[in-house]
Each structure stands twice: as C-alpha cells, then as structure tokens.
Image 1 (cartoon, rainbow, N blue to C red):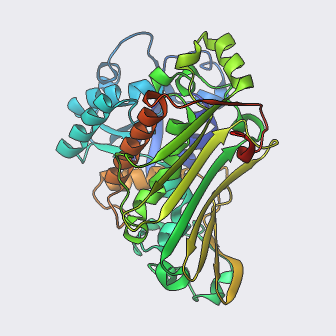
Image 2: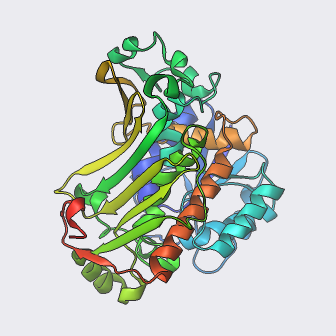
Image 3: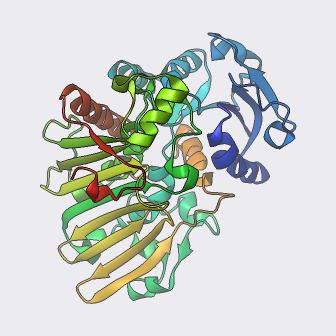
Length: 410
C-alpha cells in the first residue's frame, strides 16, 4: 500500500481530499499516515488529525530533512500548501529521492515553471501534477473525445461513471461513446467556458489565506480558476485544434470586487497593485480557427455558482455541466439530453484525481494524452495571460459583490 504524506492542512485537506483518501485506504491503494504544515492550531482537534502523525514546520526547514524518516519507495508526498512553495519544495523532495504529486498552481512564475519542466523531464517517475477539472470534472467530455483509455479505472471502477437514460439515444453503453465527438456534433465552431462561483464560502475568499489574494504569491482567479478552465481544452486539442501557449494573439480583461479589495487590505495589508483579480475574461482561437471564450470569477451572481463548458459543433452541441459533472448532447435531430455523468459525491469527488495521479507516476496513465505535459502547458498559458493582463497596463474593472458577469465591464 502506498503511503501519503500531505503537506498543507487547510480547506483542501479537511473539505476536499480526506474522505477520498479514506476510500482509497479501504481499497488497499494508499494510506494517509502523516501531515505537515506551518499551522499548528488544529492539532488538538481529533476530527482533523486523529491517529495521524503531524510534523510542524516552523521556519525555513527543507521538507526533505523534516520528512527524512518517512522516505521509502512506498511514500509519496502530496504538496497542497501555499502556492509559492509548490515548485521549490517539489524540487527539494525530488532531488532527495522522494516521489511527489503537486496541486495547482504548480508554479507562480516562469522561473519556477522552468525548474518544474526540468524536474519532470529528468525524473518523470518521481513527480506528478494534479488537476481536479482535468482528471475528474471533465471526464465525460474527454470520454466522448476518445481521450480516456477503455481499460482504465474510469471505466472499470463500479459506480464511478453513471449511465443516464438519454445515452440510449446515441449508444447502448458508455465505452461506445469513446472518440465519437465529431460524429455526433460535427466539427467544432465555438467553445465557451464559464467558471463563476458566488455561492456561500465557495464564492468568497474571506476565509482563505494570502496566497489566493497576493499576486506575488500566485494569487488571483486567473491562477486559481483559470487553470481549471483551460486544462481540459488542451486535452481536447486533437478535436479543437492546437492552442498557442504564448497567448500572443489572445485578449484578456480583468476586474476586482470592491468588497474583496477592502477585505484583503484589512486582513493582509496589501496595497492595490499586489491584490489579485477576482474576475477575468480570456479570448483566443485554436489552430483550426475555433474561437474560445473563458470567463472565471468569484463574488459574482446572486449566491449561486455557474460552471459549464459548451462546444458548438456543425451538427450539434456538447454541454458539460461542471458542477454536476454531467454531459448533455443535442444534434440537429435530437433535443438536448443528459447521457453520462461522473457523480460528484462529497465522499469521493477527489478519488479519480488522486488515483490518476498515482497511476501516471507508476507509468500506466489512464489517459490517451500526456497529462503532465497538458497540465504544464495550461500553466504556461495562464502565466502568459497574467503577463498580458498586468504588464499590458489594461484598465482594471471594479464591481459589487453579486453582480451578473455581463454587467461587470458596462
């Protein structure tokens, strides 16, 4: 059984990954046996660290030293702490013979990106990259595009995929959907991706750390939600056309919520020029001249979320609801109908992400594309979007919490 050391014990551990790790332990795949963080305030809460050893990191100690007693072939370190530490800590661990999987954003600047690229190129069996939307939420669409191997756990694990009644309008089982996106909806004509979060704590950053707000630390929604939004598009290049990571011909607009600005100044003391954006619109085209519009943001809508990817084709439309992870198809002679979903249960929603990351590390990827290269290219694209947004000296919009996205730049 693989042993996992989780670095970072905030919301990610408590609300996202812990229950999925419990399932994988029951299946004999891996076991969480230690955690590490700079925040010791939760150590006495049994619901957080019950029976799990915790290592405190009080200063600049190297993780390779702190975790040296745990190093062996069965140990993998999962880095989910502050953004700016992802690449430096991954490099330290890999150079000292640890295996590592890293959460996004993988790097906060191009210098770190170069380091990460070299690590993956030289030691691919020791470092993996995790991406929730790429390896969980977009799976129904990636199946339709033929990017998931038919012998992978996505198809074989009972209950992971759900066949909906509408599937019978197209095929009689899920595996027969594979690779038939152009057959069903035709050649791609336009793509729209919306990741809007306005519901409860999900739609706010008041309870999160400075790394999500401070541009110098990888903050802002282009880094946070943007990678989620564009990673599946890079995986769909065989269908959509190639995406230029340089973003030279792309356009970007950004805005900041007034309420958020005041919160960040009060909580972290950041001046305006270091406060990351809460909303962004990104427009570009593929090598097949397919226009793509990506919009991401928090503090929008009236206490609700709107997450979707829509591909308009010459013969129909694919609509992926990125909240329920459900795929809908419509064609010239069929109305929109739900065909498959990958249920996003709170107890297991991160299971596919962790398992895919482990399998890639072990050399038997469940994907038909290079998932690490895809994640890295998405990261480079996002860094170039950020450069254009801030170095281009474009006007930054301001908006009130709860606004409709279409009203932000009016």
